[in-house]
Image (cartoon, helix red, strand yellow):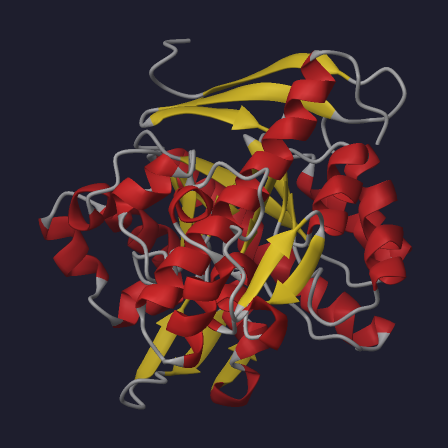
Length: 363
């Protein structure tokens, strides 16, 4: 296969864990896995330019099909020949399906046999998402990796409720797969494994989806409010059941301890809004911990957020100045704190990848 197109290569496996390192070749560049993907919900990672993301070593971002379909709309993005041109991002893009909004916007949507009806959070208009229309939208976006319509069931939910949602999710993914296969158009479509916190349903989902030749497999429905132990109980067996030669994507996780656990058990890709969301609340990462820049002890602190960090923020600004910006309501604080948090998570995952390649990773 042409290396400018799609291919997933496994380069190394950890000898003591299930961690692995690889290369995911896409039309817009190579993704070094495992990889953390910042979220640019509406075609923008909040408060950051594409150039800032590149300086943070970001290799791929995620954008949201539901939000982009409402504003600015698929037709407008298609006029720009896709989301890459529209937002001036030259590297790979993954777009989700809108399935998470079934969870996050549950009060304004209705799930039926053929798809999901949303009431727009902008103007109240009705939106119909079906397995095919979601693919059509993502074809207009020309994202490198597309996700099929699914149901992200809330937590807690009964096994009966999760099982009923899973039936629809599987039906929709088969429709999406067949429709995508009619015209792949230089885009990959990943499957999404659901099943809540119920191991038998997760196993059933993997078994059903493996019969199709999806290029990659995602685990959805985690990080939706369940305790960390429940998340671990889902990830460990589910990751082990996914195809060895395909990329494995855990959706919606971004805490260092969650990332490390998932990598330890064989995951390759992750996304989360957490680094920029935390930044907007004044929280920053230091050595797997989170501290609030508003703390009074930082009022005259001339040191950077993290003396070992090489991000733009830590190379140029003191804790005292960043605290001043934040408590003064200056928007620059969102930018500078977001740069640090994204850089931190990207480098955290890269450091684990380097250990895997060097056979020094023990999880």
